[in-house]
Image (cartoon, rainbow, N blue to C red):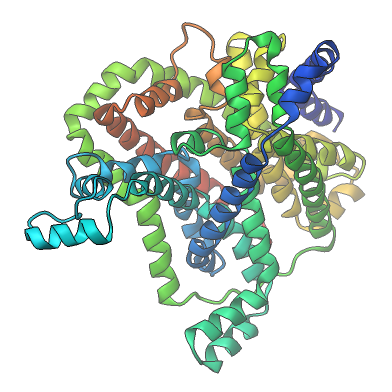
Length: 536
């Protein structure tokens, strides 16, 4: 297992350790050379911190509320079949659903014209009598805040839909652990809907809190969606510092991002260590198969509605706005090179993350290298929670450059996926099989592969596919570290978003959503079919 430990440690040193050491050096030397600039950068407006935490918490609450139906389906007996489909939004760009919804309020559309009229002081509906129009102006007046509130509401709801799979997985774990008789008792009790909902929230309060917290942690470091929605957050403040200064002064961006870095460090350290300990505990004792109740038909319908809002409707809108096959063909003609180069990078990142999942599962099968896995999980999760623009800047300042730098930045962003799913795969090894391997003295990597890989290959494949899907459209970590002359799909899409190239964006969105669906099915099939024993 020494080879597995060397691979795990080596990859993390390459992707996280070397850039991180450079950041520490730059911050220390920069702050020592210009302490006034360091103090100025460290003074983050309290309103920005409050908005950052408030937006993240609000998205977490909305995502958890929307995830209740999908979580019921995932926790049911057929959850493994439907979980990959319901997880599709998470493999798509965060900004995709808000962009599709935003096209419904463009100028010339009924909603857009209504918003324009309201902001100008006119009633939202044409054809009203002169008296009614005058009455509207007298009573309501100009509603200049409507366009701003509409844009931010679309962004918040769209980000919540993207995060639904995360909240659903956390809730589903809580639903599966609870005794089925409790749900049956609540259904038999009857009463008002509010009463039943309060009982359900009380019974699952820890799962609800964990779901809200998990989504909020991810949103605290999100930059691109908040930037497009014109919301000031700490991550955007750090991004602005990077854009307004040269590479020698990038250390100020790390100083300015200290609130998000503190959140990432504390949460990554605690959750990463807990995940490894939980995997070891389940693997040692074995997890009894939970009694999974079939979800009510209403929950399945709610899950379908959420999927339509997050995936199906944006895909239909993009297809409609693009104009059909002609625009799709033009997209492949114009963006074929960018798509190809991004696909190559995504494939290599997927291989790296799949390798991390494999060596993590192998190391946890023994007893001597758990501390290595625990440290690696903490480091990977901290890096995953740090704003992506800072990860890209750290790699750009390191000796790692070119294509290797781009792969390192993406690997640092998504390494936690491989290590997390590797822990999940290791926890699924039956205690009897592990005991037999120990008795036979077969604790090498080859022996583990012969005994466990036939039942765990799907999880490893799923980790690689998920990381490849996220790498394909990763913007934040690619903006700075992208090598010159190398085409990038994510960079081109960012330009489409900024310059309102609606037709090209619609074609790109249709292609990306379709690819996300395919990759979600492939990764989900692997995860669902390649694990020997389920954990409830």
